[in-house]
Length: 334
Ligand SMILES: [Zn+2]
Image (cartoon, rainbow, N blue to C red; front, side, top):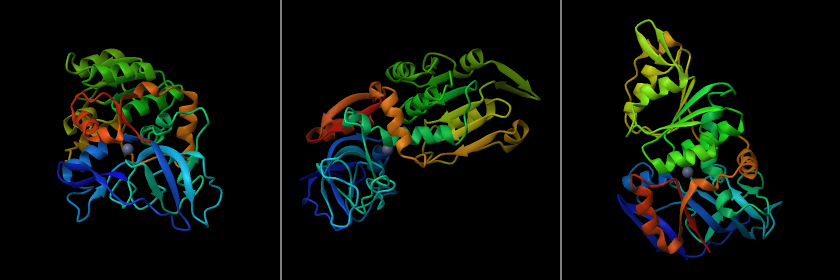
């Protein structure tokens, strides 16, 4: 069967590998849909999770499918169940350096547990929507980490899948004043569909002028600030993060969910004077069901801008690498 694996920097292949055999504690999923993550693109560039690895690295961690086999000791998971996967709880770095990855027709889930690594999805929920649970969890956690309240003014920097997931979460929680910022008009249009009240494209407009116009401005000592309460940093741009620290409102919070692989200089005098909070955010809320419940309540379908079959993976991956990649690129399997 096929499996997408990284062999080195910029060397991603659709390999032929043996069918998996479940151990007594494992399950096998027939993967139906698996999304390409920004981190997949990053790993491919590096040639592995941290850099080139001795063994090929299987990719894919945003997925849903049907249980087709279970080991003798697995309890509560039925063959035929439609499920979404929590790749973190599945352990072994599934799709992130471990021996398994989701871009494959048959996925071995080691130590499978209902409500731990596998979560039943509603009968009428398409697999590609259920596969959004993982990236949605990343955006939701970025929001949770800074306790955003209705009435607060939020700027979401970057409207890729994680920024869009944060927007959908914010809107679902009754936060209305959401400004989405991105260089792609396609992404900004999706941001508006998912709940952003306003959008700014820094390609055409001055980001900080516009944000000040939308959220208001304030003066604190020597500093010209925008009245934004919360920033969700989902771009990975060090320059933009530095600017948000400089211009963010008095008492504002910044949730950093993007991968900053380079150091970002921080003026802690500014942080101190504004009593600003810098918050990191990784992975998901504790309850994986939170994401499936939101997906059942709200239509996140507009996030999926491209669909490819597994044998078209190299084309799909080229799209994912391009600067105006749309939003989520979904691989339909089986
Ligand atoms: Zn992901």
